[in-house]
Image (tube, rainbow, N blue to C red; front, side):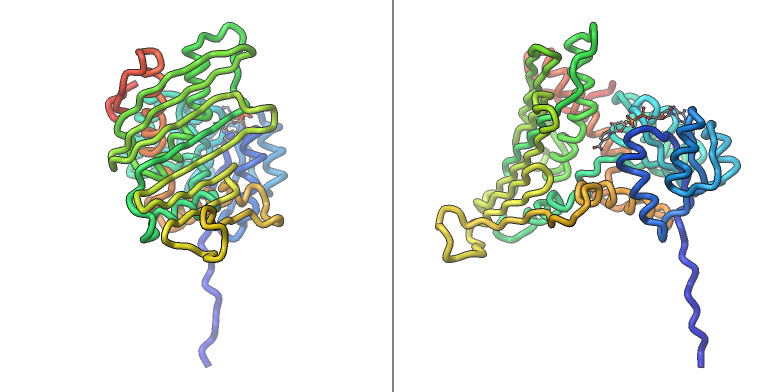
Length: 357
Ligand SMILES: NC(=O)c1ccc[n+]([C@@H]2O[C@H](COP(=O)([O-])OP(=O)(O)OC[C@H]3O[C@@H](n4cnc5c(N)ncnc54)[C@H](O)[C@@H]3O)[C@@H](O)[C@H]2O)c1
């Protein structure tokens, strides 16, 4: 009788760089939970006590304060780099220089030029990077995106994306220009990436902004897509404390309409497709709510994005769409910059692909 042996499973051997708030709140708990996929070789932070605390949490055997030393001594297959965008641009470049994949939070860099530099460096070193646009892995957004492929949906023509954030608000002495740019890179990148996730590349953006009391700020953008669809992207910091809102509507010329409220509730009105023929003829919808036992990190998308990174690292191949790459990071920052330029130039229509810096 042939002996049955378990094939040894291949792990993604990773280091965790940056042991601050978001890393420990959202990303590293998912890495630690997927112990059949990841082997964490080490943690690294400029502040050694933070690296040690994270190492204890995730069970990492080694601790570093210098990323190059961590890479040279551990020889990982890939790295998570989590921190503010400026830190990510600098440290992700160090990882890419070694020819290995990197996962960063969003955005991977604070400027269009920085995003392009990372994208080009990855190409030059024949490797890749993933940006933490976790909404692409959110259960509700994925279910909604699948509705667009249904036969009755028709051609998607219209999108509305609203992100009513609670921060960032104006810091002491900060100009309107700097406040709006911070709002756009920290929150607007998510909104424009969601728009691209649903309807593809953005052709032109025309935007305006308003500034209110207590550091408040709002941006409203008219967007046209290369597919021919149009829509609006609204980003502001007017959400009440603890009450950020995330709304998406997409409508097709088959008179279908999919809506996602707050990344958790999907409503689909499928025009000729009617799941409940006896219901009110004006409200023939399909609803999907998150199961009450679903864990927040899982349903928001953090777990899915972490797993996608680990699987691509193990496979040795570039990740497949819709995994957000450094090209998607660049496109999101270009969209933000086009909106920002438009706000301070009479709502002029600007093509994001032409934005250099
Ligand atoms: N996807 C989401 O929904 C979401 C939500 C919140 C925040 N974020 C993102 O998370 C990031 C914010 O991170 P944070 O506030 O947790 O950061 P943080 O400042 O708390 O932590 C960053 C850590 O990196 C360390 N560090 C700095 N330079 C380093 C270097 N060269 N080598 C090693 N370590 C270094 C610092 O010592 C610090 O401990 C931002 O990019 C933000 O956009 C994403």
